[in-house]
Image (cartoon, rainbow, N blue to C red; front, top):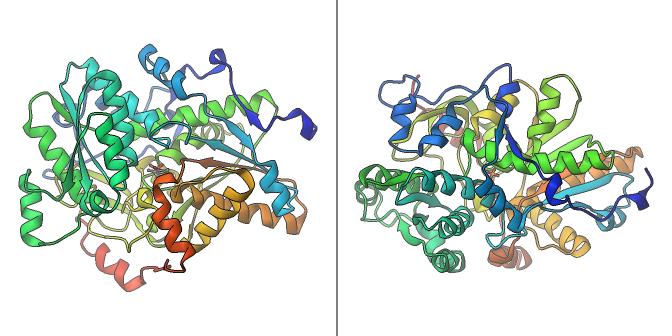
Length: 456
Ligand SMILES: *Cc1c(COP(=O)(O)O)cnc(C)c1O
């Protein structure tokens, strides 16, 4: 197919959009390990999980077998407001790099929340509404997930209580205000509104919080208020299921033009965008129908896949959540300040952890300043101001394209551009002013956190 036949942007018609989410677990020979009760160390039952999560979402969480989940009409209607997201051929970036590689990116930043997180937020809000709940609680770090969930809750007229990591609450007022525009209440975490928050504040006065603390608070509020459940924006199997809409759309669009990616790249925080993007491709790989090189990109400051270990660990600092088997740095690992807030989680999706352990995908880590350098190259050629998280994938895609320049190979590279960086300009400022550091944890530090993993 000649270059001219492939448009800059490949959109799907409404009738070509995926009608179902694809559950990758159905095709995995080695299933992800079950969540364990933190007290008994026995697999969590649906009944136990239903105290914390919405019923339909619990079913999805535990379902390793159903391959296809039809997307409910109400969710499809919402998706149509901002989907399909464009699949873009990065002609200008290719030209700038002088590479024979063909680069494509799937852009998820085209909605007000500015990231892919809305794909799962709307699904989770829908199931909460269907169950007749009053509202949901959650945590947010830099604020992308909280923003997405606020939008989704406003649409279904649900109450939304967000616990926002205190340092972000204070330093990033813009996302906080967007959440309030959509009607959410936002509390800086740790707070005095929960027992776990009071305990953390007593032990660590003056702490600026972490994602793990905020999770503990949000869970406590959900289980102690009738009509509320807790929702989470990444890591969980159900979130990867909803995010498969990214990969399904990409696959349909690529098939339409006869394009087959050789390399698929995504940034990995909790693993939801990458898990969603690769889903149908990994499905083919698992069924032996096709082969793809799949690369997870993480920050060198928070390297769960590349330097963590595969073990059961707590998902939160307060240790109230179920135990999850995943690549982890330890639940009390607090990464050095890094401007990709969405990638600062100590663990990784159990699905991606298992696939990585089985050698079905690769992982690399990249230092922060090299990520911002790639972000600027991208912004100056393709026009979009990328989120720092997304720019990890850009870095890896550029590096692969430059390798092709050396070897002359015309590889097709696909990467996930998860969001925009308008609310991350303080990070860009630090980069421009030469005030950004590339701190990488030492082996000794990582070993110390590992020693505190639960003994299962
Ligand atoms: C949250 C976020 C991520 C990382 O989360 P995953 O669950 O790993 O996808 C990546 N990019 C953006 C823009 C985000 O908001």
